[in-house]
Structure formats: structure tokens, C-alpha cells
Length: 437
Image (cartoon, rainbow, N blue to C red; front, side):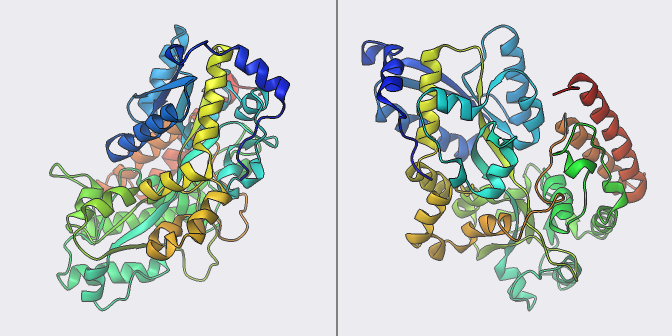
């Protein structure tokens, strides 16, 4: 992408008049982010770099919990006029943020503050999700997609070069790992398994998750994943769970820790796991594309992670600082560094090309899987992404119903029928509240 550039001297002078007279009076910009641990440290590193790069603004970053907790904190703060200027919100909360009436569209902010953004430079499958009526509502920042992590040592021990491309063949490999005693836990279930093993399964195999192009074409969308191959996938997961091939995390360890500790041979999780795996794994680890059904041409996967939203109700000076910060985090230099450190996708073509030309992906081949998988083929209505109102609530219901399969209370069809019916009630509630938007 082109680096954002001031539009005119007049606009720039107007912005300067809103700034404090001295560096000691920097305008503070609050940024609430939703990543912690290693990723949180890196978010703070961005802030340190930005604050050191200029003397007009000071970004103050605060970890407000995970995405759901941060969103709840923002809603509560907004009601009493104490909202941050910038909020990191998950892709799953897109419709909630978009229709909240509490945000400033990022393209309007950047234009008003004199920045000429080349939005076409943003990676298409990432930018496409955040564009509404041709204009981006939020700045893509920490975008990711799920990939298949595996223990290469254990696969070699079982006679495999690596995971197979299809679910059918992968199933045989996982059962072999267990039967040969190479791994008692061929796969561990990630905390956001519905994203990697159900929603992206649906997208890659070009199956509708909902009507109206998965919600892109209207609030009157309905979930339909109980009528597609997702039912067979849920049945497969239930069988794996019953046979001890698919395991839940436990004993004080999360799924990634169980993979890193070689307790489990595979894990379907975000590419953002690179930071933790590279730091902790003491074996020959690797990653590859998500499997697909036999006999089909796989489509692109969909994004996860989050974006940066600008919240309304702030001063002109704070918006000037917010625009400067967004300009900073979108630069090819910062994006290349952020992607390399975290495993998130570089969100602009320029940043991606910068990394590729420097030979980064030759040295780190698993880092390129996400962007290649996201960019595979031409997105269909089924693979563009998911835009559902109150998506977090519907997701929680789906997870609850999937657990009923594993405990033997329901068949996959019964569980998904219930999840769809309950999820559609949530969609109708959202539609009534936001009708006309």
C-alpha cells in the first residue's frame, strides 16, 4: 500500500492548530486492546515505537480482557462517556460495532484528517470483510486464519510425510497415530474449534452457513448449516471424541500447551499461534493448510482476529492522534514487523511483498500458509466470511450444542437443528432492533 500522505497544506495546518503547544502537553489517545501474553507485549511495543516516533500524541494502551470482555467494557464506558478512542474488536463482533452508532468509519476519519489511503492495497480477503458499501468501516490489524499444526516427528514415525489434504485421509492418519502408540492424543480440540473446524470447514468446502450470502446481503439472514455437510463434520468430530482421537484440553494446560508439550500430535488453531509455538516447541513442528472434503476444489478460508475501530465522542485533537496512530500501524515497516513477530497476516500487499522479497517466507514457510490459504481462488458467497448480528451469542449456543454431542445427549443432527433454531431467534432479535440499517 502507499503510505498515508497528507492531502493538502491547508488541511495539515488545520490539524496542527488543534495540537498542544509543547511536547509536554501531548494529546493522550486511549487504545483498548484484547490480546495478552506475548501478543500483549508486542502491542505495547507498537505503542512505545509510536510514542517515540513523534512528540504530539501519546497512545496509552490498556488490556481490557478478551474480545468479549473488551466489548462489554466499551459498552459500559460509552454509556458514561469514558470510552477509549480506539478499540480492538474481533471480526465476530463486526455487526455489533457497525450498527452500534458509536463508531467513526475509519475511511471518513482518515480523509477528514488529511490522509490519502490506498485501500486497494489491503489484502483482498481481509479488506473485503471490513468493507461496507465500498468503504472500510474499521482498520484491519490483527487478522488471522486457522491452519493445521502438526508434530512432524510423530507423523514420520507413523510413516507419513505430513498431514493429508482431505478429512478422509487425515482421519486414517490420526487413527494410525493412536493405533501405533505414537500419540495417545492425535488431535486436541482448540478453544475456538467452531471457527477452525466448523465455520471454516463450511467455507472451504463452499457450503452456506447462512442465507443472504452468510449475512452480507441483509439482516434477514438465517442459519442453515444444519442442512449441509457440516452435519457430517459434527458427526465425525463426535466419533473422534468417542474413540479418543480428538481430546479436550485439561489438567491445567490449554490446547496450544498440549501441542507444544508433545502431548497431542495436531491442533487446528490460528496462525497467530506462531509466537507461542516457535518459542516453546522443542520438536520438529510444522503446519499446513486446513483439510477439505475429498473430490472438491477447496475455497479460501475466512479471517479471524480483529480490527481497530475508532469510537465517536472524542475531540478533534484525539481524532488527529488516532489517525496518526492508524497511519503508523498500517505502514509496511510496522506491518512486516508485527506479522513476523506474531504470525498474524500482513494486512497490506506492500507489507506482504516486503516480507516475501526479503526472503522471509523461505526461512519461515509456515508463516505464508495463512495468506495463501486466505487468497486461494475466488471467494464465493459461502467463503467470503460471516456477518451475523450478535454472532458471539449464536456461537456460544453452537458450542453448547456441540458439547451435547460429545456427552451423548444428542446426535449431530439434533444438536445442530437446535443450534440453528436458537441462533435464528437471536438473528431475529437483532434484526428487529436494527431494522432499516
